[in-house]
Length: 438
Image: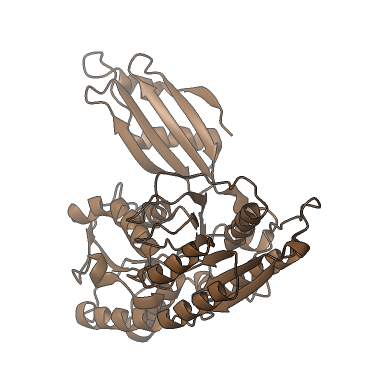
């Protein structure tokens, strides 16, 4: 949904553009942001800017702080008293009712005998339970036989479970991998039997046997985490220094690096110029990664960092955490070993424990990936495959697994914090007030 219109600048801004011996000056980011916020009556943050070398043209991209609206602003020195706005709504599907699949009465799946294997990494994290249950129930509602298995975060167990699915006659496999490279031989067995493989939220790497991928825009998600920290600390005007630490996800999960890369790209400018200081010095992905996204592993590392670098009373201003399980570990470490105010802590998944911590002031935000929509797309994709329909994807260039570019369907995340959690999580039906202890 897009529209383009012009906004006449204020008199003061026009006067500013007339400086430099009559040559129009490129408006400042602050002035442009004010115009955007005035026009849409929303708070925005800068996502990117591009200014021509001769400063004759400029473009800024702003994203609303609730993650639902992207506005591209263009300016030309030929017409310096006008901005063009191009708006696009993003991520708004997360507050729609829970999607369900409606069976096509022309397709009798009951008599086709199709079977679908669903391999989830663990039951220890809330989101995988929800994803697995939703996918299985919706596929069964369409008449498919479903083999749903959880692998207890054990690679050998997942390999054995998927091999059993192959041997039991599954026609489609939906796989959220624990460690993708361990599945390469198993995926070759699936290909030999013409079994379609859908990678679910974790890209299966270094294999040409992956048919489709369903995920969220994970690099952008990381950028939004980094931008949240930059905005909360007002780094555009505060010189700092501010002290920050970093906790990333599982090194065997391709998404973990994408989250980290997006966030670090958003923050690296401020780290390089000294506004943000990583006191521990640990910034490389290998140093900040957390095996299996485990809360206790994140907590142990955070306790060590606090003891070594902050026991003298130095205040921690921000702690970048890639997801909620690692954020919970950091929060536990802070509760036990840190006496200062809670830093700005990021997260992802909107787990109940973390939303409760958000309400208590112990976590600033969490990226909401409405996994009902992700699971819904997995069900739709499997049904499209088995009923001979065209399989819908919306990205055919980005997700190179080292062997092929995997056709992908992307869903979009939104930022959840104390200001919008009720609308996004409760009004949408994702949680009830009782779930969150309200």
